[in-house]
Image (cartoon, rainbow, N blue to C red; front, top):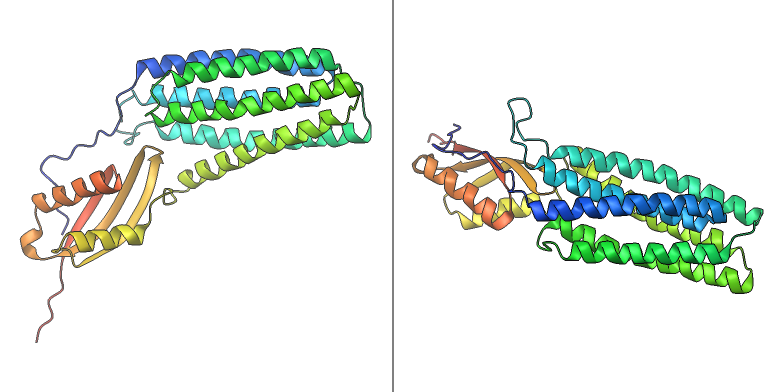
Length: 300
């Protein structure tokens, strides 16, 4: 028996934060602008490391764009065709970005190996100047994002990402100094491989996590059996919780369907509301479809 509650609220779209959205788009535009400068400058001074750092900044710009898109799409209501809204679009975009970046990483490593086999002259002084500007750019974007709402996952993730990006700029600056004073050109392809590894790890994680969501996998931090055991121990009238399916529409919207056995006295709207409210407050499951069933009575 499947009982629907009298008033079930399906709107799980979060209230957009216009200030966060504005900071995100400014940061994305600044990053994308300097990305072009660094890639073009890297080609000019013949530095693969600078090009790799420029590609790294491209990943930053895309990440910020996805974050902004998440804020934008969260304002769109669900429709009869898109009943969960449009939040999964940012997951699909993240997956495509991750796969694309893995291909770019392969290209950077290929160029670096070729450069190691056939060393070429790198303009160390110009490389240093461009890298310093890149470091200042990263610090500015970090300050801009840090001034936003750090309780928001999009903002917090973007801020931490740029905090780590300063290490890449520092590495390129160190490489430029080494090239200028020692003439050791091998440091440039070595740094580019280091940058490719940093990008590759992030791209792999991005592809893996977004792919997991697209394949309707159980979200990270959730365990189906633990939730079932908790429901059975918390609600004495539940004797068996089974047929649980748990997935995510987006990082912020977790969905669950489940069956639960109970007695006839608890086949009602109050029971449904109580269990759903508990799942929301304790387990952060935002949308629950619950089917209550009666115990099978054995005849003597």
